[in-house]
Amino acid sequence: MSTAMSTPIKLRSRTEPVQTGQPPRVAYFTRLWVNALCIALLGYAVMGRGFAYLGIPPMFVGELLLFVGLACLLVCGRWWVILKTPQMTALTVLCCWCAIRTIPFIKPYGMDAMRDAIIWGYSLFAFTLAGVIICQPQLLVLIVNKYKYFVKIFLISVPFLWIAFQFFHEDFIRWPWASDIPILYLKAGDLQVHLGGIIGFWAGEVAGSTATIWFIPMFINAAMLGPVNRGGMMAFISSLGVSMIFKPLNRWAWSFIIIAVFGISVLLATGLSFNIPGSQRPISAEQLIGNFISIFGGGKQGDLEELQGTKQWRMDFWKAIIDDTVYGPYFWKGKGFGVNLVSEYGFNIDAEETVRAPHNGHMTMLARSGVPGATLWAIVHASWALGMVDGYIRSFFAGRKRWAGLFMWLLIYWLCVVINCSFDPYIEGPMGGVWLWCIYGMGVAAMYLRRREPNLLDIPEPPPIDQGREGDPLTEMAAQ
Image (cartoon, rainbow, N blue to C red; front, top):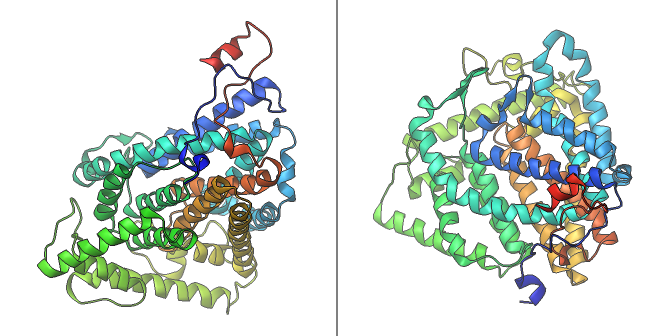
């Protein structure tokens, strides 16, 4: 392994100035916003829906960060260059179309219309993050360094938080303005998305090699969460598969696959089964295999009937949406953002009608924005994914291994999110929506900077902004 790949990106001396091309105060507060965004992304990952309700209604943490980020973007400088990229052009057109299908429904449906619009509305994070990174390229290095700490906090804390949530979620403190939402509200599929993202980060070696000891908490997390959620399990398996396509000999994927095959073989041979705290689905070979088979249409009697039942609900729902849009009267416009799709199609699963979506983000876009919106949605994601593959190939053959690893990591993370949102309304809330569009924006910025700042990932994280004036209190704050 080359020295450039084995040496992590380290912090530069705090006294060395950095040229950002921005007014010092703007650069400082932009970096402060990116740090706050990183903390929020960690909160969404380890606290789930509970963290999303932090704030004062209707201004929660996600909305506050978005508004502050947009303010930073507007004063950043030549941020509008991102609009010239094909990915952002497609995303802009998608947002315009979805806005047309949202505005007429705000009056009759009120906050429900705004809540349904989150699936595309949080794409403003993509514009914001891409813009500030392009204006201040060293922020890309900062985010990579912050993610190293995210990995450690996530892998160590999740097993304890998951068990605590399963046993004591009824007793957790609840938000005064949302009495049904505890401050910790986790979903196994969401957690497995981040496990897949971590696999991509390790395999890509974006920040250098990772100690093998971290495989232990990774395996514990995967074994604990795998039997609970099919979509998350599929996302995690996909992260292993894609990382092997890019790097067939990477040790992380092969180590996990070998141990997983060995473990399932032992469970099959012995018939052992371990109960998961708070879940009716045990850790067993039958459960793991049943989860996987049920995705593709299989299933058995007994304990696995629930898996097939939830799958059938989704398939019937999705078929009704396709019949109404692709082959029906809602081809051009869809039903709009605001109407409760579950009630509209008669697939209610609770008397309170709390479930509003078909548990598939792509089907949600088709149902609400019609075939034109779904087509734009596909173009937005396909163009971005192709951009990541192109960036990886060009970086790899140019000998820019860290750039190649960055594109690989972002592509794997995006794929995990897209797979999970195909089984769950993951991106229809900030827990997945903010993550998806931050990944998207970071990828667009990486495509832009790869050509203009090829040595960016070979330098350490930037020090605080040098104001150029001694005694400036803002400079002193940044230097501490």
